[in-house]
Amino acid sequence: MNKLFIALALFLFASIGLNAQIYIGASVGNSFINKDLEDVQGDDFTVDGNALGYKVFLGYGVKFLGIEGGYRDLGTAKSDFNSGVLKTHVTGIDLAARGKVHVGPVIAFAKAGAFFAKYENEVLDYKYDDDNTTNFLWGLGAGLQLGRLGVRLEYEGLGKENSKLSMLTAGLTYHFGKKEAEHETN
Image (cartoon, rainbow, N blue to C red; front, side, top):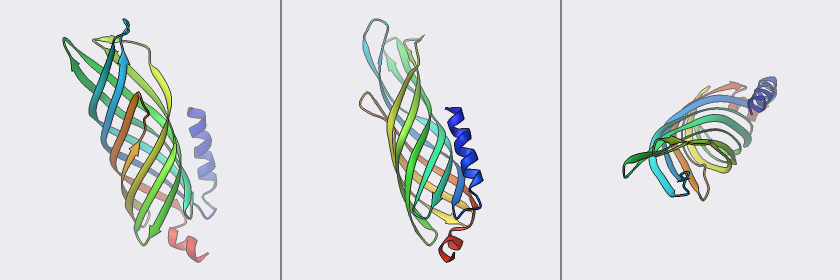
């Protein structure tokens, strides 16, 4: 998976001279984690909690369409159970297609793609095998772009039936390449 991001980064930086917008960014916010767990005896448990999460990302776009990929850490959600604690820690990488509407400095966007999740689970102080899955990712957001700097707020759904994940984050972006206004006059 690291090779995928290296190839993506090389492609993005090689296209700076094109009429494209390349950006990097970071966001922090609240993760919502609801994960079904099973102990070694086959008993079912559910971890349902919130955690502090963050993500770093890289994106590439031309006019209204683009792609965005990154790494995220949703944090550790904990639930108390009788005489112990249930925990799950979620990290992963994502890749999504992104569409945007840009009116003056205001940007609204939506995205859809895949989240390659890694779960580190612990049931009653017993750590067991990591759980890796590929989940559908969708997101909605809005922000302001002031020159090369941008701010944004977004909500993303990252999970499926036995693992409902989502994030609400605020972040900053830095844009490389030609400015958006130059794209429209060329």
